[in-house]
Image (cartoon, rainbow, N blue to C red; front, side, top):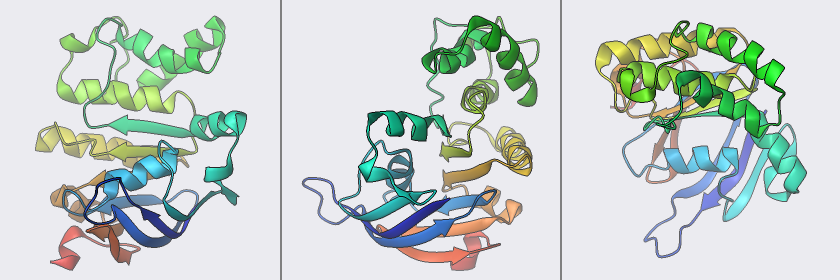
Length: 229
């Protein structure tokens, strides 16, 4: 599904590459943790997968196609197949829970009938049925992140990318969110999570790709954060 071939990313003025010679493959249906300290290159790799940025060198293939060469229409289609979840939720404060999730479908040009049908299903999947009319400020941090997950899921993506999704949550809420991601993965969605939360990684026992100073340090099919310490 996703293949990196000697991927390098250099930011202007950087004293070292953000990513250096990264080669890896992620197959459909996998659950993968990207781990490493701050500055390891996790977020950069997530941005490259979404094609928010382009690599300086090497190739990233999505279903066999080099995403650097996608035209405008193909790029939009690529991004429609990917759901994004962020650490800071990125919800629209002036919109209700329903409207925040619906916005993802409005961007795709879905009809009002489709939106009315799909949004409640997405909210039910993340455990927020009955919260449709709430505003973000009326929700807990964990609930706000679940809205973010619902917004990503409502597009029915092939891949769910999450960049430090538990960074602003307490341990119990983080555990519940990871159980939700695991359930989503069991439904067939590929899940890729960038995190430095070692306790979550250890407990989940999923594939672990470890980065350090932009380089691939370890890739274990069923590993833990502590395997490298």
